Structure formats: structure tokens, C-alpha cells
View (tube, rainbow, N blue to C red):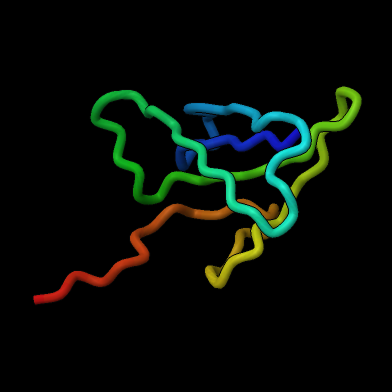
Length: 84
């Protein structure tokens, strides 16, 4: 199972959840949504993923262009530039 966790800058867990076992399928995309507490600013939050197998969790490194933290987590930031 793939577990995705959203944490604040102090590493406090805000939300965490798992995708169904067997997903995402190879070459496919699976979307997930986290409803954060009201007034939570999403920019700067930390997102990490783990594979859960038989009760054990193993860290997953994101495959993305953005530089990752040493622990493999990703800091959320806007990816679109504002056009003036």
C-alpha cells in the first residue's frame, strides 16, 4: 500500500492516508486529495510517501524535477508563475 503524509514545518502530521493496494498502476496516475484544517497555508508543507508491506513502512523518493529533502520528502510550493 502507498501511504502519503502531509506534515507542517515542525514535522507534525496534518493528514495521512493510503491508496488502495495495487495502485497506482504502472504507467498510470492516481490522484489523492487532503482536506487540511481551515486556515492552513499549504505552501511550505512537507509531503512524504511510504510503501507499507506487512506492517512495515519503507520510504519512497518522489520522482520529480523539484529538489527533495535529505529524507526524500517534498516541500510543497507553487509550480505556476504568475503572469502580469
